[in-house]
Each structure stands twice: as structure tokens, then as C-alpha cells.
Amino acid sequence: MAAPGLRLGAERLFAMPGVLELLSRSNSTSQAFAEVLRLPKQQLRKLLYPLQEVERFLAPDRRQDLHLRIFDPSPEDIARADNVFTATKGNRIDYVSSAVRIDHAPDLPRPEVCFIGRSNVGKSSLIKALFSLAPEVEVRVSKKPGHTKKMNFFKVGKHFTVVDMPGYGYRAPEDFVDMVETYLKERRNLKRTFLLVDSVVGIQKTDNIAIEMCEEFALPYVIVLTKIDKSSKGHLLKQVLQIQKFVNTKTQGCFPQLFPVRN
Image 1 (cartoon, rainbow, N blue to C red):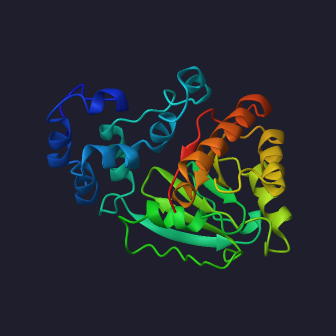
Image 2: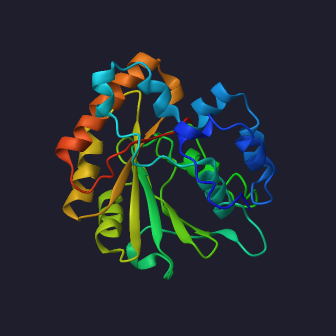
């Protein structure tokens, strides 16, 4: 375990010598995350806090447009999450089943979080990355849009269930609306929806429909920006500011801070 009280935000992390080394040697830190913590500080900052890298290019009077202090996890927080997704005898991570209708979905007592987004936005790739420390769990990933045709349920220990939803838009399943809308509206143990948006093209018409569903059903949801490594910093900054403004002015149930990922 890390030393008591060692809860550091991004700002303090790199100012205290020895902290990263202490965490990297902790028994509660996986080998994969320990290797990440040993990266050069500049590379580590870009990896753990990518929005801060974008923030550097903003004029000081515009930096308040980005909500970077709402969710500012310390490496200790990340290590704890790392443990949640590490498969062990006491923390089984398994594929449960798939369903094409809500009445076919498994009856699971745990809280659920689901991932939705346009076809080929990177949903399955993100879930595969989350399960990288559970190699026995197979998450099928394809470069062809519309690969996921069913709702796929994955158990994450005793913590929660992850649901990989079919993509909307191009090559979406014919019964997509009935399948996904009914799930979002009626699934009682759904606690959080992660709505993935391609940061290269921004919010599209089909994304707006998904956002409207989340708002209509009063679902707490988070916008995840995918493929942040696929465009220039200038283009990414423009998209981040536009989407952040949209979240601030056009939504009520959306978490105010964006979550950027590379995939």
C-alpha cells in the first residue's frame, strides 16, 4: 500500500521527488502500471493527463474553459483502478453473455456501466484496453464499422458489470433503436453511460441523438474523446473547446469534464 495520506493531484505529483518511485515499488501496483510510472516525467504527464498537455496551448484567460480540476486522479487513484481491472482469484473478470433484447440480458445484481458510440469510434478497443490485465477475457475488435451486433456483458469482480453496446450510425444493427433505447430506459442497475465521441470529427448528428436519449431518460453520462493521437494538437484543442462548450451549455446530465483516450 502507498503511504497514508499520499493522495496527490497532477500539479503536486511531479514536484515531490521519490513519489513515483515509491508508488512503482508498491505491492498494490501492477507491473504494467509500475512500468508506466518509470517513464520520463514529460512522457508520463502526457500519458496520464493529456488534457493538461492541450491546456498549455491556451491563453491564460481561456484556461477556465476547460474543467481540469473536477476529476484530477492521483497515481494512487489510478493504481487503485488498475487493481479493479486486474484479474485474480479473488477478483474474477469474465465475459458473462450477450443479448439482442433487454429481456434476454442477464439478471445481474451489480451496478452496470455501458459504453455507446458511433460505429468504429473505438468502443471495443477501449474495453479491450481496460481488460488488458485480464488476458483470458476476449473482446473482439475489428477495423470494420458495425462489428458489434449485440449487447455484450462483462463482470468485473464484485464491483460492477461493463456493457459493450452496438455502435450506431453506419452498419448499425437493424434493431439498434429498440435494443439500445430500451436498455437505456429500462435497465434499473445502469449507473453510468460512457458516450464515446471521435475527437477527429467531433459531435455528429447521430451523437446528438444518443445525447438526447441520455438527457431524456435522465441518465448520468460522460463524454469520452477517442483517437486523440490521430490529429494535431491545434485541431484537438479546437474540438475539445467546442465539445466542452456544448457540454456546459446544452446538457444537464453530462459530467462536465471530458475524458480523452488514445486508440
